Length: 435
Image 1 (tube, helix red, strand yellow):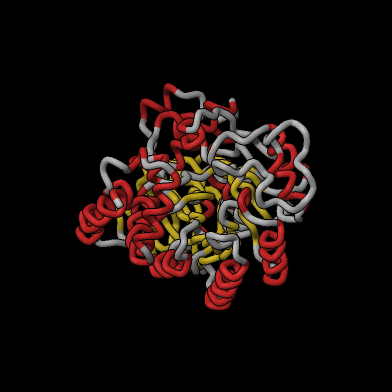
Image 2: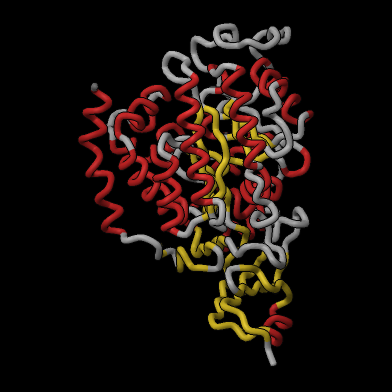
């Protein structure tokens, strides 16, 4: 008697990501109960598996779902605020997000999730001022998400502001601690401008909850490390390495935490991160816009990719980020695809669940149609995917074995409803930007 399965997928190529660089042809993958239950040759699995659905993709590659390790999903709505959109400065993005409120986050994240799914992204890490809204939207869409819990000092540096945010974070932690698709992490707002006391409080609460930390390496204008710091003087050599060293000294950069570099990180920062066992999340296209051109690769798959704010980078395009990373770092196409899958999963602490195609892992999957000409013109299937395919070539996406995109058609959302969201916000955002 054959084993039951919900789904049997037969692609032309199967890229498991573990072991690194492996490419399997003539292989298939079976899914049952939202998890991968078998990988093997087509002949073996056809003889052994009795699937409810049997899908053949003869010109396609099957990969783990792409992992967007850093974004601010709700800011996709800023594209409606022409002419601010892509050129909108970071400080104005933050002001608009704060003024617009919870409904801005709710609508923006819905729009972003639809776009990410169509681009093959099955997991994202998000930071917004209303994490409860982002969490609810992701949960309703049945998409995997890591939601940042913002904590920062008040306008006057008052500890009461951080206290209120920590209390809210703990309530959300209790609400979603049992959700298999949602994970929460602490995201101190502008760590460069926070007091040591606030950062230490965040670390202590994170320790109590066994929560992860994600910390931006961006130094904010006007903070030269002397206004709010109450720890030892910065190391010699200027600002390079100062923030990373301070965070490490306070116990925030460590295994289980991640540093976010939306601009090219300094070599001294990278050395501190690597030495303390933290992960690094880089946003290559955003870095290019900031004038940087460097993508460090940490050992142990501890470098992941993010798209940053869609108002800054322009699109939720992780294939584009991986392509840019390969061009900047000189890594192979296989390594770049690993950054977009297992690297991102590792940076978010989710490598035991997603990021590679292995027995028992969650069936977050992406299928990419590969152009015949690209196959013949490229040295490997990884090159054909990275340099010959785009996000529009994503044909099928599954989240926990559930189809979210099928034959290029988005199943999870109503297209007409989504199309109405930007128009509804355009006028409000323009008025907010003008104010």
